[in-house]
Image (cartoon, rainbow, N blue to C red; front, side, top):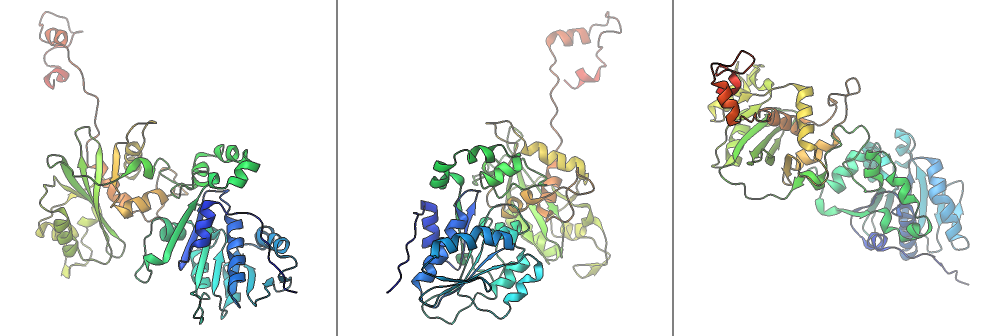
Length: 452
């Protein structure tokens, strides 16, 4: 007598999108309480039941997490239908499909899967896996089948050792030469999407709401720019990133550059509106590019607009061996010869970072004094992942990808900080020019009035 698989529970709209997704790499999640674990389990059970002899690998970082989140629920759900081998941690379906349950607590644990092949691989809480672990595991995701293409599925929350690689692939969508953007799909989910949890445990919303700011943004809002140790926790894509618009020709424009050859070289373009608000409207981000080529790219990208000046990192003035194949010449000299004169930027780090912070801060409902066009992808990508230096919390850690942020700092420091104007009344002027008043009154020689 054939056994029947009976599955209880209906997917919410976000989980349904996850079930229907057939991309090469599909990630689901964002906020906590979005129903990620249930969605991953149910997805794999449906796949195993729909395709004969399908080989599936489902991983968590630790054995305890694996048992609690998947082994126990799957044994309960599949009892009487599929067989579970406790020693091998393998679930065998009547049609020959198998779900292997595993974990990779140590970095080297991935080697236990060497030489194995799986049609489907899932990383549950993917941000708990290092990028090295993910890349090695992905080499096992191959198949010779003609009726099924290999796939990998990920569930994830912001934070953890794998935060940056997950964010790069699925949120920022910054891809390397061998990565195809069309292969990557992200399905965001929040607590409010999980109707079952919201109905049965509505208090959980208050639990997340009462967390410290960076954790609340990460776990409740699914904000990938919020993380513990974040240097600029004021940064918000909603507040600071805007769609490009046509900048009036009469606005002041300038540039700032953080020079690098092996490390990225970043150039940012700035414009200032009548209220003093600064807009970063374009960027250049290149590596292993000689100074003369960068200068030409800067001129081409600027077009015909008048640029007041270009502030550059002080190392552009250093004469370190050959520059552009010429001994004893600096990057600054190469730029000057190419028609892009540079001025040495103020490299006061602590004061500079404070200037950036001041421009990011704003009161509720107000518009920040720094706005970034959404085409400046590297500045937007790297600014929120800057972290504190462990030895000096006033500074940014030198382990961060800070090249775009450095250029931003140089640009903002190149502008004089606006000071409140001294208001001089007519009565003040009369007193200033009255020679019969005693010395307690301001005279015409008072610089305050000469400037008025």
